[in-house]
Image (cartoon, rainbow, N blue to C red; front, side, top):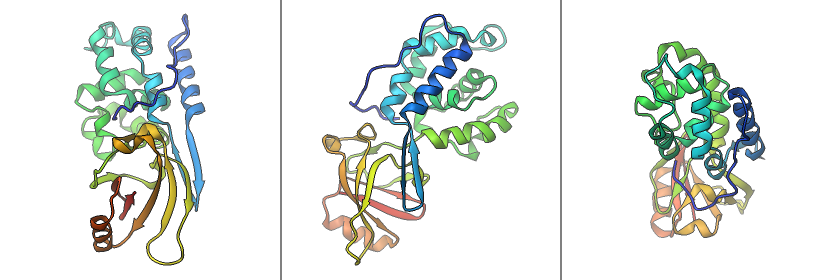
Length: 243
């Protein structure tokens, strides 16, 4: 996940909470921060990057690792070590949030097993092919619990002028608002506002944009060549140009 400059106040877990109480507190915070937008039969839902950053602070990660006594002697991990917590905070904040939201049994063991195999936020969204890095004992929980949690949390970040990014599903596009601006001719056009914590680059000062959706690759390429665009991406066999 790409870090933005849009941050609210960090979310600090209260002292004296049990592991399950810490999990419940984070789940409640993520639910409160979830963005939900219904438009034209599609429900867009995600937890903004800045809310995930606010949860996955070093203090919270350390407290959870220290509270999970199942990691002490039965695993090769060193939950008490600062290096483990720092690695999570730097490279796997979204995975950390998704794992907790999933309510998987042995949540942190699953999370550490996956990250130890090299998966970080840059690999999101994880798909069925991720079974190659998920221990067999977690296959069922990964499919039934982790995948639905990921679909309700993860949304991509967009980088200025990047044009070949692929988004796995329309419902994960991090929109705050969307309104049709089509005049009846040509490709569908919309006035949209993206969540600012998912925009990286010169356009982040203004998250209000226009967006056109193309089903014809040739038309999209012609339009992109003559238009100064902010970013563009593929999603579900369609090409989106934002300007």
